[in-house]
Image (cartoon, rainbow, N blue to C red; front, side):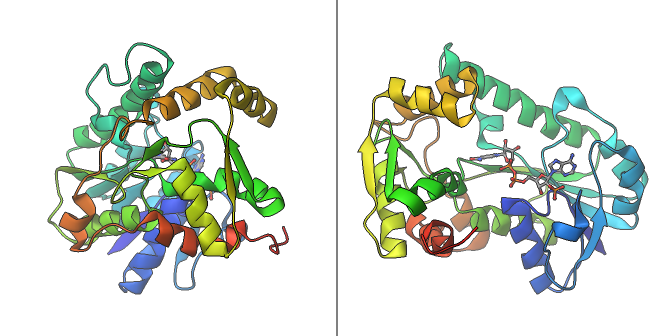
Length: 297
Ligand SMILES: NC(=O)c1ccc[n+]([C@@H]2O[C@H](COP(=O)([O-])OP(=O)(O)OC[C@H]3O[C@@H](n4cnc5c(N)ncnc54)[C@H](OP(=O)(O)O)[C@@H]3O)[C@@H](O)[C@H]2O)c1
């Protein structure tokens, strides 16, 4: 039985691929650039692009299960799912997002609420399209990924300091490996058919705690310098973010200062895998090379 992994070069997809290979499964990895994907030995790599229907047949041929990267958003149904079912796919495991399960109104009616609504509609839209195919499905809904901390990598490597607003803002950020573990359980067992699994890390970790954990992982003190939200906004616009994005990023952090923001920790990882989710400290150790100054890029 062939399992097609889309988004196979992504943060979670790459880990799904390696776990399936270790489990001795026949894995086909889809990427737009097979020559640069650096996928593990033993994986069949196919060139596939959600925007190019002419590439789908080769990717789907003989596949019974698909790990579905959320590229085909609800309103933009492009026919990929129909094609998959026509060629024999009977199970989808959807890489979704925690926002898909947020009640309408989460985040209020300002910029944060608008952002979360957009995320909810996009991801829930895809989930509904998958459910409508009649195939078996599991929705894997990660909360904020720990890997977002890589946005600090350049400044930590070069200056050992992170300048952001709201040092105390934090979410129970989740290691991409835990998301992959849950996804693989849904691909390889029948225990999660028809379930939506919201996956988080074990506990809220503030921005300052994340920076300290990265410092500990690389054996160097890294400073968190709290700056004014307006200064951060100016910096992010200079870094290339658009105004709406800079505004919701600030609102998201402000919302998470005194608690867990929109998403408290879940017990999904423990329930599905039998062990607690990895901590942020573990994530920082796994990614230490990304933050060490001696890495030449
Ligand atoms: N960041 C978070 O905290 C978070 C939390 C929950 C959910 N999410 C969701 O998770 C997703 C992850 O996004 P990301 O940007 O971080 O992903 P990513 O891990 O950087 O991976 C992007 C993947 O998408 C593939 N891809 C992009 N365009 C494609 C196309 N036209 N056809 C086929 N494959 C294509 C890429 O493959 P190639 O380049 O190899 O073709 C790559 O494997 C988003 O939808 C986001 O909403 C994110």
